Image (cartoon, rainbow, N blue to C red):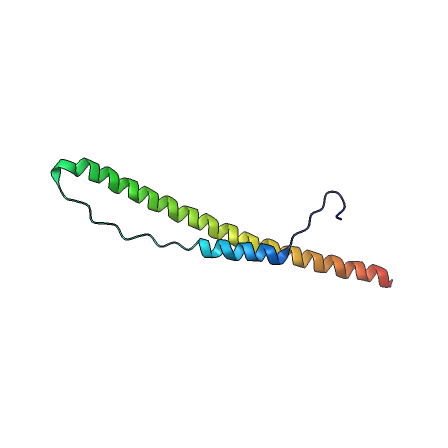
Length: 97
């Protein structure tokens, strides 16, 4: 049991989640489907094209954010292990003295 105001980080589980997020963050925009070039539906086609461009931009940003969270997860796991190792070494130094 941890003392109050502390928390535990399972570094391996955190890395596994970060790996999953890293895989999920890959993004390749689909090739645009050719839209009809008809004067009767030109306004609709223009709006649809803008909507698809907006959706692609938002998807790219979502995947970039997911990649950032994955990198943060890896950094968190590394920092937790480094802190635990430093604390363990410091504690062992106090026990020997």
